[in-house]
Image (cartoon, rainbow, N blue to C red; front, top):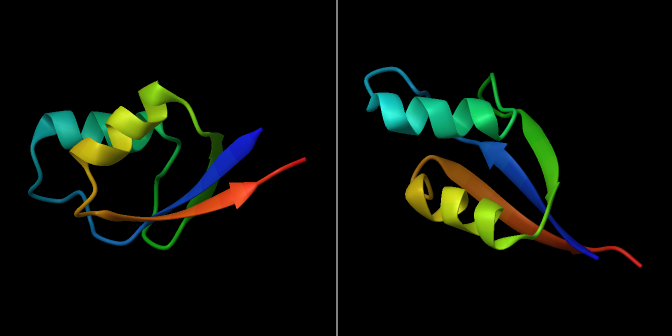
Length: 62
């Protein structure tokens, strides 16, 4: 199954509450912290909403 690695690049300070909730729901707390999630439509939707604050790299698992 494919996975995506998500890294927080920008601070959540001064961002809308909705963006902060999405960041927290992905498991990100600090700048430059990375998490790995399965590549699902739900995760892709969250990534799309906050794409200006994160960096995404795709990984393939066997």
